[in-house]
Image (cartoon, rainbow, N blue to C red; front, side, top):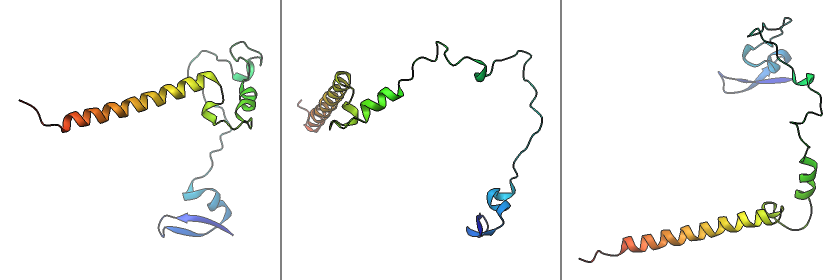
Length: 115
């Protein structure tokens, strides 16, 4: 049995297969003709380019997967070594420094003014 969401009853109700796969009366658009070109210029499809073009570069995903999936006990945000450690420590230093600055500013604002 097929179900669809009824907007009127606000719950699931029984439906035919066609109604369940095309909710709210939407019908799939099947066009047999190609759309008209927008401009008179021709454009190359992505499949027309050779797979070894220079702008594609080397696929780095498998190498990065090896680095990030290694079971070495390090958290993910420190897996790439020195640059990650530098960014992490800088972020922590700025966070601690900002917290101290806020506390000092709060302390100074809480003191009465001397005339």
